[in-house]
Image 1 (cartoon, one colour):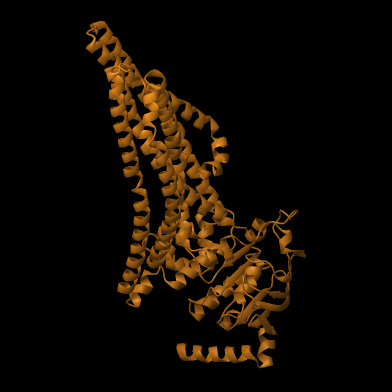
Image 2: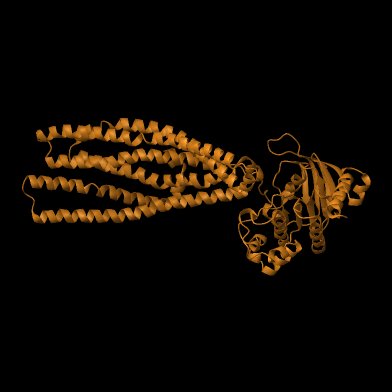
Length: 582
């Protein structure tokens, strides 16, 4: 029952609802004692030939009143207890979602999307069951069982009650044993479900790749194996779960047998009447539900405990990047300066960046070039404070970036990443993502700067065209330009284009860069690109190799150095001549 202690904070928060629901449950449990007692009285009256019409009508009226009272009370306690359990599910779901939004990229490098989805759905459902049906079952089984035993002992025969309860300790031991095994197996079943969830999400997202490479059969087979694993692990849970009811039924059967055998003797000896024995066996029948419920309770609680452990472990994950005490609540502006001695990704001993030193004045453009894996994106992500733990400092407007509130720092930076993401919404909603109430004219202006406006107006629904999940209905170049328009609409102090012109042709790229230069005067721009024509007009360009600055300067200065930059630029110019015929 440890999970009930773990959820104590919520029970205290919703104590009014749970106390009201519990009291009503106790009333229902007490009212259930009335019908068996009335049946015994009527049987004895019939035997003694003393039952009158008035007495019969009185007992019928009491039974009807009892039934209606139980109906009303059950309706209310369900609202109290089940309603509170739904609130718990909502609360934990909101906490999880908020937690996910605060976590840094290192968290998502360790966790799979499907696994996180399973936490927010399957696990929360199991916890909700514990706070709802679990509480009901616990209170109902204890109260009904307790009231029935007391009624049997004090209104009929304490001797027969003790005899009937002889098998109960065995039931307690067995259900506890089953519960331990159920917890372990359900934990494994939930993990298997998470893996299957992740596999499904990954396959649906990558369906185009699967079809392109003709791997549908192999993927189906892989899914089948994981699905079979989920089934096997849930069958293992069901095998333990299926032991509860037969065990309890046997225990109840033994109790009935002992009650009838020894109860008959008490009737013969005159210690009990026929009516009292009938009432006793009817009460014993009422004990079947608490016993079954007790076994069911173990099932629910152990499932809830396993799921709550998984969710708690997730919520206890430390947030790597947070606001520092006394952080400035204003958007930064001014020069940007990097003084990075070294930086390594978490759990990686290799330096991703080393000896990075440069200054970028407000309004200048920085170009960053280098081979794949040279550290270009890493350099930019440090400015966004996606990672910390580096030796050195980055200043923005003369202040270390940690000196600003995280939200204010990031709202001053418009970031267009390599792996641009579009939501399954209209083009208008995607561009106006950060400012949903922006007038359409402003959205069209941003789209024009990104040279995507003409494409959009030729779509069937124009700006109202739904792009599909992750922008599946658009080409790579269109998605990139919509992502750029989204960043431009922010009118950020710093615009970062992280290789986000790779899917457009050279001429479109040149048009976009010219528009940016004309319309972002006084604003800082940082561009990484494999195509050096994108950064040839930059005020400062740096060439990275294995996380180190190998070359730096303007385009003309780098061309004079006759290094990697010059060699790559000339090669790309030759390729462009071949492609466009001069």
